[in-house]
Image (cartoon, rainbow, N blue to C red; front, side, top):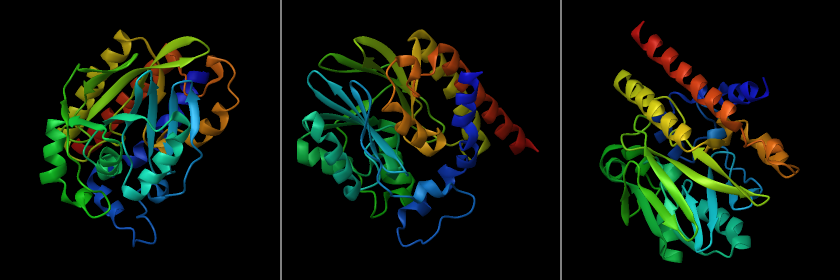
Length: 294
């Protein structure tokens, strides 16, 4: 029941985010004084969060709106996503200070501004390599103009990500899973996290928010099935997200500081908890598809 409750918390605000894809351009305009009523207010909340060590090699850095994850390896840092803009990069830089600021790779999950916006600044400052799917590189530059506004600068890409690709830096390998739907070239990631001398596999679903069109909903469902198989094959037991408001994440960050054992770490779901999380997300997609047919 504990893991089921965790999964339900993850999905509580996920449904509220379903139209995020069609409305995310709104978030680029900082002059807006209040979010529209059909989107989570947290998406527009730039309140900084305390940089938090979630596992021995994984740090969460960001704001209530969106976070980046710093994965420490024996040869530098792999950063998963880069938040909204150049202003956000200072939060990332400050958060990485305890890691030595040895940033090497930036992995971009998809072509929305709240995920790629800080990448170019960080690349230029640290000579880091940027990775993104070819499809969403095109999408970022040519399709979703609202996200490519002044708040979220476009970035160059050093290497295009593909399904099943393994990105290795030092002693750490991140597996890329193609999961289109939230955006045309969205990708998700599977990677190792360490605590108390043991290694566990973590997964991050790349796109929070069920898309608007029926075609994209069906694709989103197919991507989830593909991702679920990867999670099963890699014995994933930990779940992370870029949008903590869709995952009860604020409370998790507060609680993880006092987690002595892996079972007490709120980001650890166990295999049963991961299955429940994925199954419940699948049910949410089915409901969204059914509602579109009505």
